[in-house]
Image 1 (tube, rainbow, N blue to C red):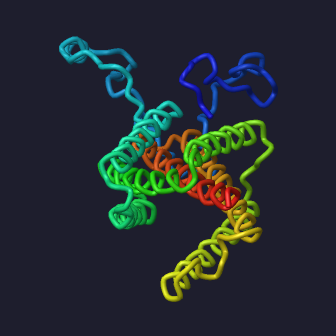
Image 2: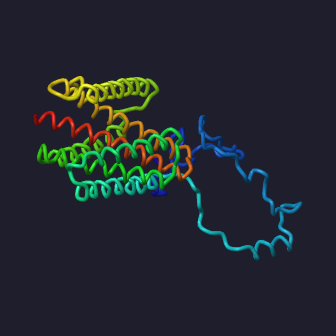
Image 3: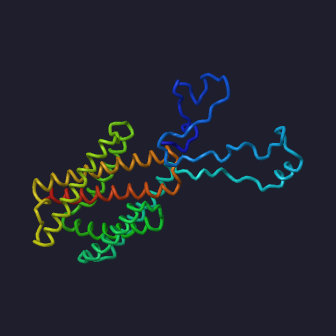
Length: 296
């Protein structure tokens, strides 16, 4: 990932010479081609040469006058996504989730679980729109975060009444999973390869289908549906859910790293923040259910 520190943003050449020094210097340098598969690569708008050069490469008096009369150039605006952009927008998104959760916890009675479910439904619809249409819209993403926070506040308050202290444990567990996955990704213990993605997504799809079937059975037949959230089976399902959340985090890290590497537009940082928020909410809810089962 590219750092905002210019001293660390330089790379090493293939021949181990730093920033191109120490290698052969004969002849003019060939233009560097963008990496293969770069979706953000653009042509060089200045490839046509110096627009101010005269026939002999010198500026005419009129051209010099135009240059001196032009407004001063502002600071360089690259418009490219950086890690700092993702961090700031993730902090904004998660901060909105926390504020929404505080409102849901303190302002909505814990008996009104229906209001929490309505907020969850609205958040789900907005999340699906953002995810499938890839809308890097700050207002839409922050609105999702607000409604998701309302739902989390209501459901967390109820869980904390049933199992005292379980919310704090789930929050700490979510932070631990995030930190552990980030370290594992950075040191290369987890590598996002095509096979890794295929296997993980297949397991995730099966988990989601099984969860929906269990929910449908609970609505129709009452109780806990197929009993997937009870006993040893419930613990196993909960553990798989947490592991899938960690898998989604690795995909988020990979997508953000690729976006920075290939020069994605700055607005794409909002999608990175949205993805991280989704994964963290998933992990928190799975830990909340898993810890409640272990309490029983």
